[in-house]
Amino acid sequence: MIKMEEIAEIFVFAVILAVVLLFVGAILGALIGAIVGWIIGFTPLGTWILEFLRAFGVDGITMVHVGTTLGFIGGFFGSNAKFKGD
Image 1 (tube, helix red, strand yellow):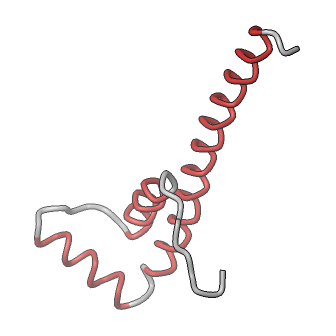
Image 2 (cartoon, helix red, strand yellow):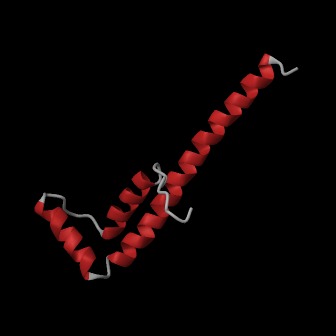
Image 3 (cartoon, rainbow, N blue to C red):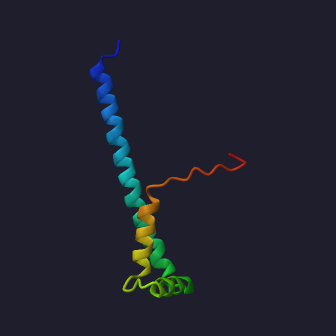
């Protein structure tokens, strides 16, 4: 029979694992976002995005900053998209 202490240990382990995976996902999202932002910064789209942000008073940032921020935020959210073939 499973003891109450074992159930508590499993629960604590599961919570800690979930927090670590969420943190790692956010960090990886930020890294990928920074790389993609850097690449987009070389295109006209990057210039357009920065000009758009400057129109709202956001100045002194680069596409790497934008990509890192969006990647970090996106790292907390997973895709739940289901396609017909899945």
